[in-house]
Image (cartoon, rainbow, N blue to C red):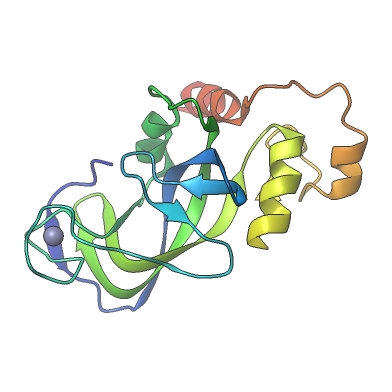
Length: 178
Ligand SMILES: [Zn+2]
């Protein structure tokens, strides 16, 4: 995600930003994955960053691009909801992520040493219910204005679109409002 050059170490050790994930099918079940790398985000444990640039330092480093990226503005993350997906990718979702450990502030966001999803947005109610139960975080459906999606909503959602349309819905809304 293009969040610009590293500016300084954030003086907070917990920062919230926006990013996109892939929702992938693994042998252990449905998981969140990195849009760019092969990182799989495991439930209940923080994902820990490693430097992919083959440099010998702990991620993130201010002059590098490593660390978990999070944008300050959700619009910057929306771009990553579209792309060429592997066959195991079910869809992509947008969400807020909490970065912890060392956090580098960049021009457009943050890069953190460790990360865990804080809140996710998915339109497909089956994906909503699955991610909510696996990751234990609130997953909102933009199509359901009444609040957090619950399994009862998911159960009555026989007419929901089968594809992941959260991304498109959010894109449209963002485009319409901006
Ligand atoms: Zn690095």
